[in-house]
Length: 326
Image 1 (tube, rainbow, N blue to C red):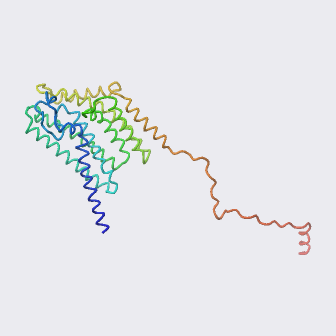
Image 2: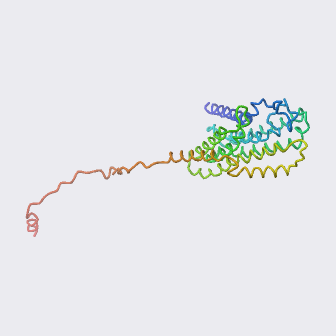
Image 3: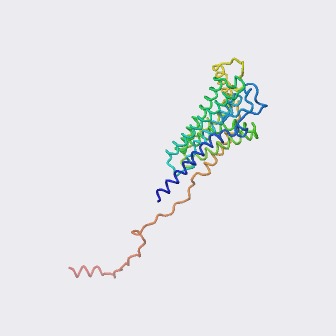
């Protein structure tokens, strides 16, 4: 009876894990697109997005939404990959296999469905162009798979949470700016800094040696601005009749990202703030000496004993004893 009850609980946990993984990757990861109704408004269906007004897509396979597509795949991949952490009673290996399989299936399903919708309903040739759509699909896969791997690794090694946080912090400015209620600004940068600081703090919860991964996390967060610049460059230059080849686009995107990677190309204060908060927490949590050590317990064998009585001999007692013996 007890074994049956445990089996039912395990089955329920796995079902919940499956649902949560899919929701975190698709609904939460692509929340800006979901809140927009899974389609472009008519006012923005022009240029490269011409003919896509009212066309519903599972994910934004639209040239003008390339930054949002990449950022959403990064955020969704990391968050869904860390789902097994919420199920400590499920074997970690089983959780990683189930979560990874579901996210891969969700990625394939959403990309195939969106591509099919473009082929059937896009009224402009460029929006449904085979090479353009394939490039967008490749960009989504290249963002989703590495981020999923980092999220799954963070469930196995607690210290990798810092790396996962750095990846999320890099994508958050693009992701938040795509929300209908938000836009670029200091609030977005502050939220990204908070995400990085939280990841750094959590990563050293078990062992302080995990702080060795902090430079990797900070480096990933720093790449957020180059990522935004590169994707915006491609989205702005890939237009009908532009004649731009893939090699030219990649070369221009790399140059733009290189310029944005310097200190003058982005705001540095969010990452300094995040590291400062994490360091302050680390110092505050450092074990402190409790003062002078208490004297050790002497133990039962060394317990204080009453002094033995001292027998004083009268003067000459030893002399009489010696004479008597003689």
